[in-house]
Amino acid sequence: MVGIACRYLLEGVQGLAFGQNKSDLLQQFQEAGGLRRFLVLCMTGCLAAGFWYVLQRRYKILSIRQQIDLAGDREPAPLAHLLHAGMQVAIVGAGASVGKEGAPREVGALLAGRLAKGFSLALKERKVLIACGAGAGLAAVYQVPFASSLFVFETLGLAYSWQNLLLVLTSTYLATWVAQPIVGQEAVYHLSAVSWSASSFLQAIVIVFLVTPLALVFAFLAKRASHKRRKDGSILWALPLAFLVLGSLVAFFPIFMGNGQVLAQALLSSQSIPYLPLTLAVKGVLVYLLLRNGAYGGTLTPSFALGIGSGYLVTLLLTVVGIHLDPALGMLLGATVFLGTTLKAPLTAIALSLGFTGQNWKLTIPLVLAASLSYVIRKRWEEKQ
Image (cartoon, rainbow, N blue to C red; front, side):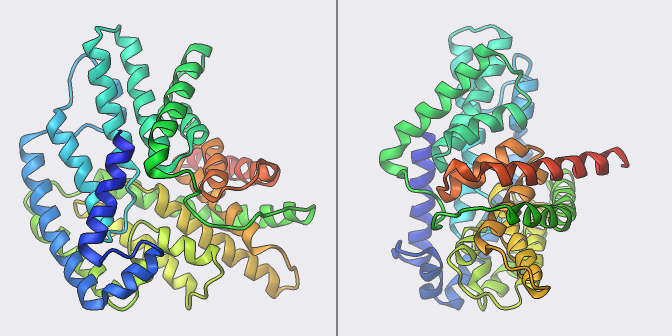
């Protein structure tokens, strides 16, 4: 039900802000006009700044990790967290460059915790159900139950056991099934079937060594932005200013609108994007700018878009030196590397790359190679810090 509510809220805000054309998201933004995009984002920045300033003065917003760790000691304020999640979805609908996936995860965790408390379950079981709720929220919104199950174990640190596995799989698959009539079962991104060959291993290795450092930089900036996020009175001028910068850009370049879905789909559809390296760099900076100055949101979908673009660029680089490989596979390899690095969850990254694009599981072999090598590089880098 949370996934369905997020879908309606997102589409409602997009329709109110940019019109009712749902056939193509980029076309919807383009038809709205540059002035309308600019004004919508400026207004959104002012409203979001005031909202989060007032909310955080009165309530402590708990992350999913905190909800699990503090279960039994400190309960999140239900209404405050629901409003907090709703604002995250609303700003994405208005074109903010952050992900919306944090909201359904947080609300799923919140409701699961309240349900577990209502049934007077033991503390250990309550923590498990909070994690299940987070996974179910992610699964419902993106229709990726298996990837969401892996996310619960890899990212939220739930202990591996047959009981936990059964609970998580039941939660994610049931949530996907309930939300499916409204959310739909089509893949988030449209991409024709991709195949691989022996040369794909070379492509994977090159992409890993070139894309992983970029993903590490983005992960570092996103983590730093979240830790140093403005929560005091300075948010009242800093966040509107950040949205003003974004609005000024999208007034002329609508490709920067939203959580990265527009950018990723344009690349997957083989649309030409001039100055792609600069476009990817600016997209990453915009995510940092919004998070650092007080906005809340996820980095999963922006990471996917940046990975798609990075993998495509590396494949083009190989073409320049005479090695012709499949750009589509390069994009999936780049997305897997980028997601695995930023989420610190290589298995989840593989499942998300396949689930988001509706690809066959036969592609798992090259993606596993890329995720494994990237994992080793990330671990070596972390050991030196």
